Image: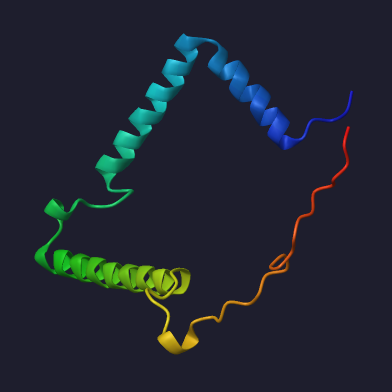
Length: 112
């Protein structure tokens, strides 16, 4: 039997863990509880309502700067992707004769 890759081991472990609905619910509840505890300890971030005025100003300034950059990137991307609204009149292509223009389809006069 060949050795299992790390991904295959993980798949088997997760399948075994999630096979029993009660065990799966216990696992998920434990994860939620850990998240709540870490959030209350301030491990993730402090809500804006709990920050000092100075921290609020700094945070909001960073948000404004990030939003400006996001809008600038979005505008540049749309300028690259979209074609011009209407081509200039001097750049209008001149229609070229097609390959089959003037081609006459002949039908045979054979009788059956």
